Length: 239
Length: 181
Image 1: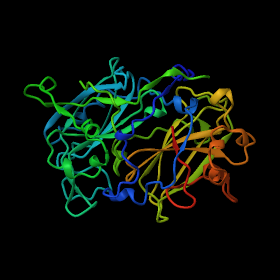
Image 2 (image 1 turned 45 degrees about the vertical axis):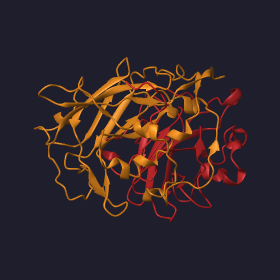
Image 3 (image 1 turned 90 degrees about the vertical axis):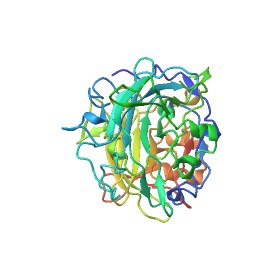
Image 4 (image 1 turned 60 degrees about the vertical axis):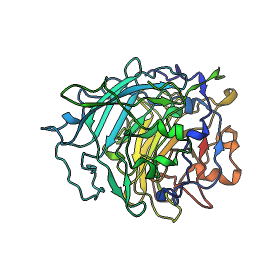
C-alpha cells in the first residue's frame, strides 16, 4: 500500500472565523444541547491531520452521479444539472476527491425511515449520489430539484430547498459537510441553519447560481456550485 | 466561477445523512484486517451523550488512523461509525503504531475522530488514546490538554467486556476535549 505522505508536507492556513458557524446558535434549536461548552484545545497539524482517506477507482459507479437513473423509471420533479469546480483557497483545482450528496425528493420528503413529513415518497427516487472530481476539480450531478419541507425547529419552520454535500479534499483538515441552496429562495432569510454563518458574503457562497451554459436544451435546468476547501500555508511542514 | 476564494462554510449534516453517506469500513472486519494490515486487534464501544444526558441517535463518527507500523496508507484506516437508537456506537480495528509529531517527537498511538450530527453546524474533532499506554506521558498533543481533562480522550477496559470504552460527552463537567487545528 502506498504511504500517504505525498500531500503531507504543507500545513493548512487558519480557518477564517467569519465563515464559521458557531457551535451554539440558539435559533437552531438542536444546537442548544449538543454544542460543546468548554474551550477547544488548539493543536499543531501533524501527520494525523495532514493525511486523510484516499478513495480509489471503483469507489464511484458509472451512474452514481445521476440520481435520476437509479430506478426503473425517472423520478418526478424538475430535472436539474448541478455542476461546478472544487478548488482550494488559492484557486487550485482539487482533483480526484470524493463528493457525496443527498437530498429530499421533489415533494420535500427524504427516503429515510425517520422522515415523517406528510409528503409522498417517490419509488423512483432515493436521493443519494456520488462523484469523483476530475483533473480540473470539476464535477457534475444530474438530479431533480428537491422540495422545501417543514421541520420542528419553531412554529411554521420550513427548510429552504437544499442539497447536502460532503467532501474530503487532501486531508482531514479539508473535510467539509455543507448544503447547497437555490438562488432567490424566499425561505433563505428565515432559515436558522443558513443564517448561522455570520458573514453575509460567506453565506452567499452556499447559494448556487442558475446557469444557461449548464442548462441542457429540452432536458434540464443548470445550476453552478463551486466549492472552496481550506488552503495550504506557504510554509512547509517540518517532518 | 467564483472569484474570491474564502472556504465554503460548513452546514449541519442533518438527520438524514444515511441517504448519502455510505458506509466505509476500512478497519478490521470480523476479526481480520480488511487488507494485509497487521497489528493488535482492539474494539472500541461507547455512546454519544448530549447535554441532558440522553444518547444521540443520529451522530456519525469518522475514524482515521495509522496502521500497526505507524504509517498512514491507502486502503486502510478510514471508517464511518453511526450511532444507534440510544447513541451507542462500536467498531473494531487494530491498535495503530506511533506516528511522528511536531519536531519529530513520536506521538502515542491514537485514532483521529471527526464527529457529525444534527445540531452541530460544523464537525467536531477529537482523538482516542489508549489508557495506560506508556507513550501517553510524552505525547505532544495530550500534553497540550489540561491534565484534569485528559481522561476524556482515553479508551479504557471495562470489566466483563472485550471492547474498550470511550464516550463522547458533548456538554458539562465531563465534556470531551475537542480540538481546533
